[in-house]
Length: 364
Image (cartoon, rainbow, N blue to C red):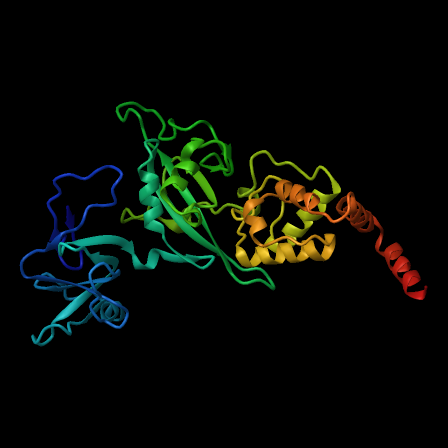
């Protein structure tokens, strides 16, 4: 297994892999070749201990002079080599994350610039792509983190996976998406969105079995092919960005069936800043997290006079489930539905009539 960026040599290190189980992570990239030094450093340029991730730097005879006609980029990527007494020696800053294994070999962990923070958790996008690629029906996969900012709310990051199906028979003209049932179109016939249907039903479960819940992308989109830049890399700017409020809704969009669900739906829309919600949509796939869950239970306490722990949102993450839980914990039979019905009736009143009623209430 060879490793090496163009700025050094195409083979800066190598490992001989005798056996690599399919379920195992990527094989190690081994040790540096002759006349090459590899360092794994922290942000302060200190060597990291064995097992600790850091940025990979390469020194030695294979390091290039720099980028032609790009002195600023050269200065950023080719830094002085502090580990040698040879004048003018430089290290190439790869931007790759790696760590030393106990046997002294090096394990590649992905790109530093592809590590994102979602709801307080650090996530390596390449790790998600690697797991997606292990699915037998997936040919290629790319994961992108999008950030959305809404007035009065902190910026929120959500993950979208783009998947190309594996060709069963590369000698025929069979489409690359042939392994997948026909999903719902979200573009001009080139992009299709997995909202629980379309892609194999086990794909999301496949990810959950191998990754923490917060690693699983909120939306999965099936493409005929991944757009590429002229040098063959994935063109992220050309990937179709879905409408979050629509893309993350469940395929079977079910509206509120009673006043309690209707009030909770309004509540979720305000807290999550999302539209087009259904009663079976998942709170955390819509961008919810523990802080927003706190707001939900606080509003339930204020409106319905029902005191629920924050953990209840994790156990009842849909509006339908939460409505049943709120009714189950009401202090008086029928109290929650009565409050919800009154609230919905008030919302239907014209603004002028509502002002008159409030004025009369104040006068009395």
